[in-house]
Image (tube, helix red, strand yellow):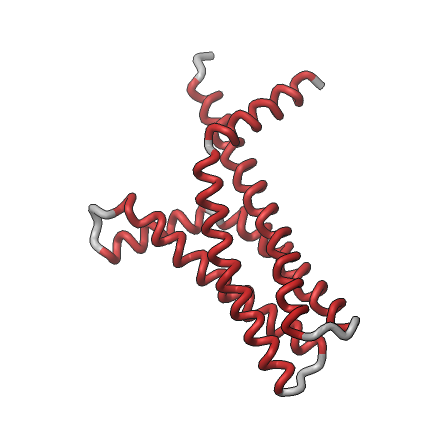
Length: 174
Protein backbone atom coordinates (compact mmCIF):
# COMPACT_ATOMS: atom_id res chain seq x y z
CA UNK A 1 0.00 0.00 0.00
CA UNK A 2 2.85 2.41 0.81
CA UNK A 3 4.45 1.83 -2.59
CA UNK A 4 1.23 2.68 -4.44
CA UNK A 5 0.78 5.89 -2.42
CA UNK A 6 4.33 6.89 -3.26
CA UNK A 7 3.72 6.16 -6.93
CA UNK A 8 0.55 8.27 -6.91
CA UNK A 9 2.42 11.14 -5.25
CA UNK A 10 5.19 10.87 -7.84
CA UNK A 11 2.60 10.90 -10.63
CA UNK A 12 0.88 14.00 -9.22
CA UNK A 13 4.26 15.70 -8.86
CA UNK A 14 5.07 14.73 -12.45
CA UNK A 15 1.78 16.27 -13.62
CA UNK A 16 2.52 19.49 -11.76
CA UNK A 17 6.02 19.68 -13.23
CA UNK A 18 4.69 19.11 -16.77
CA UNK A 19 1.43 21.05 -16.55
CA UNK A 20 2.35 23.34 -19.45
CA UNK A 21 2.75 20.38 -21.81
CA UNK A 22 -0.68 19.01 -20.88
CA UNK A 23 -2.33 22.45 -21.14
CA UNK A 24 -0.92 22.75 -24.66
CA UNK A 25 -2.18 19.26 -25.48
CA UNK A 26 -5.60 20.21 -24.10
CA UNK A 27 -5.62 23.35 -26.28
CA UNK A 28 -4.87 21.22 -29.33
CA UNK A 29 -7.70 18.86 -28.44
CA UNK A 30 -10.11 21.79 -27.95
CA UNK A 31 -9.27 23.28 -31.36
CA UNK A 32 -9.99 19.89 -32.87
CA UNK A 33 -13.23 19.81 -30.91
CA UNK A 34 -14.35 23.14 -32.33
CA UNK A 35 -13.71 21.97 -35.89
CA UNK A 36 -15.52 18.72 -35.13
CA UNK A 37 -18.57 20.32 -33.59
CA UNK A 38 -19.01 22.68 -36.54
CA UNK A 39 -18.77 19.83 -39.06
CA UNK A 40 -21.01 17.52 -37.01
CA UNK A 41 -23.68 20.19 -36.64
CA UNK A 42 -23.63 21.07 -40.34
CA UNK A 43 -23.85 17.43 -41.43
CA UNK A 44 -26.63 16.66 -38.90
CA UNK A 45 -28.73 19.49 -40.31
CA UNK A 46 -28.03 18.40 -43.90
CA UNK A 47 -28.82 14.77 -43.08
CA UNK A 48 -32.17 15.73 -41.56
CA UNK A 49 -32.90 17.90 -44.62
CA UNK A 50 -32.44 14.90 -46.92
CA UNK A 51 -34.63 12.82 -44.60
CA UNK A 52 -32.17 10.33 -43.15
CA UNK A 53 -33.41 8.32 -40.18
CA UNK A 54 -31.92 8.64 -36.68
CA UNK A 55 -29.19 6.08 -37.33
CA UNK A 56 -28.23 7.71 -40.65
CA UNK A 57 -28.07 11.17 -39.09
CA UNK A 58 -26.06 9.86 -36.17
CA UNK A 59 -23.54 7.99 -38.33
CA UNK A 60 -23.06 10.78 -40.90
CA UNK A 61 -22.83 13.50 -38.27
CA UNK A 62 -20.44 11.47 -36.12
CA UNK A 63 -18.15 10.71 -39.06
CA UNK A 64 -17.97 14.39 -40.05
CA UNK A 65 -17.39 15.38 -36.43
CA UNK A 66 -14.58 12.87 -36.01
CA UNK A 67 -12.77 13.66 -39.26
CA UNK A 68 -12.96 17.43 -38.79
CA UNK A 69 -11.77 17.11 -35.18
CA UNK A 70 -8.80 15.05 -36.34
CA UNK A 71 -7.93 17.60 -39.03
CA UNK A 72 -8.26 20.49 -36.57
CA UNK A 73 -6.07 18.75 -34.00
CA UNK A 74 -3.37 17.96 -36.55
CA UNK A 75 -3.38 21.52 -37.88
CA UNK A 76 -2.87 23.12 -34.46
CA UNK A 77 -0.43 20.40 -33.40
CA UNK A 78 1.67 21.20 -36.46
CA UNK A 79 1.43 24.94 -35.80
CA UNK A 80 2.51 24.49 -32.15
CA UNK A 81 5.29 21.99 -32.91
CA UNK A 82 6.88 23.35 -36.07
CA UNK A 83 9.03 25.90 -34.23
CA UNK A 84 11.07 23.02 -32.79
CA UNK A 85 12.17 22.16 -36.33
CA UNK A 86 12.54 25.55 -38.02
CA UNK A 87 16.12 24.69 -39.02
CA UNK A 88 14.73 22.13 -41.49
CA UNK A 89 13.04 22.72 -44.82
CA UNK A 90 9.26 22.57 -44.95
CA UNK A 91 9.06 18.94 -46.09
CA UNK A 92 11.43 17.66 -43.42
CA UNK A 93 9.71 19.83 -40.78
CA UNK A 94 6.30 18.38 -41.69
CA UNK A 95 7.78 14.88 -41.52
CA UNK A 96 9.28 15.47 -38.06
CA UNK A 97 6.05 16.95 -36.69
CA UNK A 98 4.08 14.01 -38.13
CA UNK A 99 6.43 11.60 -36.34
CA UNK A 100 5.77 13.51 -33.09
CA UNK A 101 2.03 13.26 -33.71
CA UNK A 102 2.32 9.52 -34.34
CA UNK A 103 3.95 9.10 -30.92
CA UNK A 104 0.68 10.31 -29.43
CA UNK A 105 -1.15 7.52 -31.26
CA UNK A 106 -1.66 5.14 -28.31
CA UNK A 107 -3.25 7.86 -26.18
CA UNK A 108 -5.32 9.28 -29.00
CA UNK A 109 -6.36 5.81 -30.18
CA UNK A 110 -7.70 4.96 -26.73
CA UNK A 111 -9.58 8.26 -26.66
CA UNK A 112 -10.82 7.73 -30.23
CA UNK A 113 -12.37 4.43 -29.25
CA UNK A 114 -14.20 6.14 -26.40
CA UNK A 115 -15.38 8.93 -28.72
CA UNK A 116 -16.47 6.56 -31.50
CA UNK A 117 -18.75 4.67 -29.13
CA UNK A 118 -20.02 7.53 -26.98
CA UNK A 119 -20.96 10.17 -29.57
CA UNK A 120 -23.28 8.20 -31.87
CA UNK A 121 -24.86 6.41 -28.91
CA UNK A 122 -25.65 9.66 -27.09
CA UNK A 123 -26.98 11.27 -30.28
CA UNK A 124 -29.08 8.23 -31.10
CA UNK A 125 -30.64 8.28 -27.62
CA UNK A 126 -31.36 12.00 -27.87
CA UNK A 127 -32.85 11.69 -31.37
CA UNK A 128 -35.09 8.92 -30.03
CA UNK A 129 -36.37 11.42 -27.47
CA UNK A 130 -37.46 13.66 -30.39
CA UNK A 131 -34.86 16.34 -29.74
CA UNK A 132 -33.87 18.43 -32.78
CA UNK A 133 -30.93 16.99 -34.77
CA UNK A 134 -28.65 20.01 -34.41
CA UNK A 135 -29.17 20.10 -30.65
CA UNK A 136 -28.50 16.37 -30.35
CA UNK A 137 -25.33 16.80 -32.41
CA UNK A 138 -24.00 19.50 -30.08
CA UNK A 139 -24.89 17.65 -26.88
CA UNK A 140 -23.51 14.34 -28.15
CA UNK A 141 -20.32 16.05 -29.24
CA UNK A 142 -19.70 17.68 -25.85
CA UNK A 143 -20.41 14.48 -23.93
CA UNK A 144 -18.15 12.45 -26.23
CA UNK A 145 -15.46 15.12 -26.27
CA UNK A 146 -15.35 15.27 -22.48
CA UNK A 147 -14.81 11.51 -22.41
CA UNK A 148 -12.26 11.75 -25.24
CA UNK A 149 -10.31 14.59 -23.64
CA UNK A 150 -10.12 12.93 -20.23
CA UNK A 151 -9.03 9.65 -21.79
CA UNK A 152 -6.40 11.28 -24.05
CA UNK A 153 -4.82 13.46 -21.37
CA UNK A 154 -4.93 10.78 -18.69
CA UNK A 155 -3.47 8.06 -20.92
CA UNK A 156 -0.79 10.37 -22.35
CA UNK A 157 0.27 11.56 -18.90
CA UNK A 158 0.42 8.00 -17.58
CA UNK A 159 2.52 6.85 -20.55
CA UNK A 160 4.82 9.87 -20.20
CA UNK A 161 5.16 9.26 -16.47
CA UNK A 162 5.92 5.58 -17.03
CA UNK A 163 8.60 6.42 -19.61
CA UNK A 164 10.08 9.07 -17.31
CA UNK A 165 10.16 6.67 -14.37
CA UNK A 166 11.70 3.95 -16.53
CA UNK A 167 14.39 6.36 -17.77
CA UNK A 168 15.19 7.46 -14.20
CA UNK A 169 15.58 3.84 -13.07
CA UNK A 170 17.95 3.12 -15.96
CA UNK A 171 20.11 6.12 -15.05
CA UNK A 172 20.45 5.10 -11.39
CA UNK A 173 23.66 3.25 -10.52
CA UNK A 174 23.12 -0.38 -9.58
